Length: 184
Image (cartoon, rainbow, N blue to C red; front, side):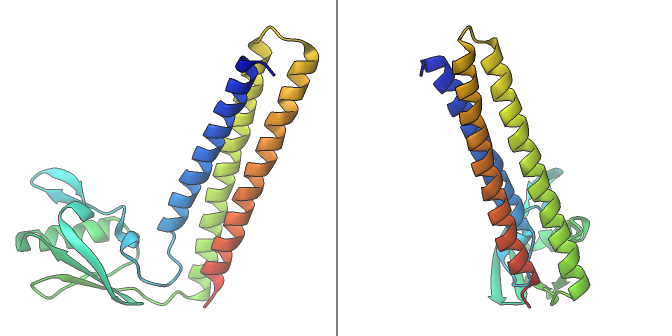
């Protein structure tokens, strides 16, 4: 197989792997009932006029399976952190004790679990579409090459095989996440 074909196949695989990494990151943000510091990953705080990630202005820890504590480095940030958590629309109600912020993570209802499973499924579908687009891009690049029809056909089969493999990975990740979400 010539180098140009191998380069196109490798590039397609790299893009597909990137879609899997993105999906895993999105799945981390979908909570499954147990409190983790990563639940607050997307929270931004107004820090002297700049939207700053919460992790850069405070320590985030878990006391137990249903409680997250946020210890700001500057006490004057407590109101801004509370506001940032509320604006992030995570469904949390932060409480401030003057020193830190305590967040009780509510136990998920059956309805909320189903809603989270739908969100996870939507993220999985987005990853599948991305993988299929990577396949299409790879096939389009192959068409631009000056190679025989047999070589093109063989390379397209290789790209399709990669696509099938990565789509299966997405399905496997979704099944695991769905089980995690639905387990009480």
